[in-house]
Length: 360
Image (cartoon, helix red, strand yellow):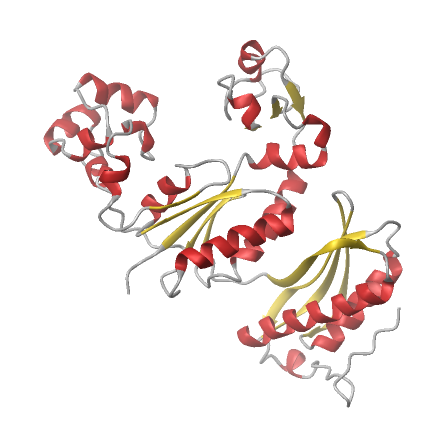
């Protein structure tokens, strides 16, 4: 079976989150940065990038390039929360996911008969749940997938098949390749190497003399070769499900029914991994983008849908959403093997007729 790797990159992630929270800033040059001396740009909107502004640039330089630049402070806790939502979605599309940062990850889609369709569905779900766009690249390995994801930003979708790498990007500057920064590109340029094609056909001895012992490895990258495996996080820390409503919901019964369905999905996921957990967390997002969580840690591990739904419903009733609900979710953490004596004794079955009784 041919290898198919997908690389997902959330476009201008921090800046996009802030523009979603502050729609009045859309269409304006915005950066996420702290207003202090020696501050650097954490993220730049695409309108700011038109001025040559990019992440890691000193804020004072960015302001010289764009006097009308708008700066908003970073809120890392929110970015981590939304990143967690994205990574939770990715886990439903592949059991081999490598999280490379808050805004990017690799997925192994080799087992899928239709990897392109699966990747497009993933892209659509990320947008439906978070309201944010991402770019996805597909390739035979991590290197090619990452480069593909950067070819059509923002909101891009690109595929580079086995053997097509130099045909697609050979004429691009060598800076396209990870590991070729400004100084490396300058040294390569001094030897006449300007493009990916130039680098792919360069003599290893020339690169060794120019860049040292790591120079020849760039030839392999320029040919689209990469034998790195996807590094999967082996320890599962939580299991959760959530849904975004097509229209904001106020009806408590509908919220309870939705929560019961999500609890059933969580329980199914736990059963597949033979896990139980102690901490139940309710997640509620009010329009437009105000997220609240409520948690309860139980004295014993649970895994059954009825117990999850019961605790989640009690948390929802106590929270009593003051405004219409845009998103609701439930999760279980502090996980442990289901075979442990405490976990085995804690499974709570549904009522005899199979119904979940959740008054609210």
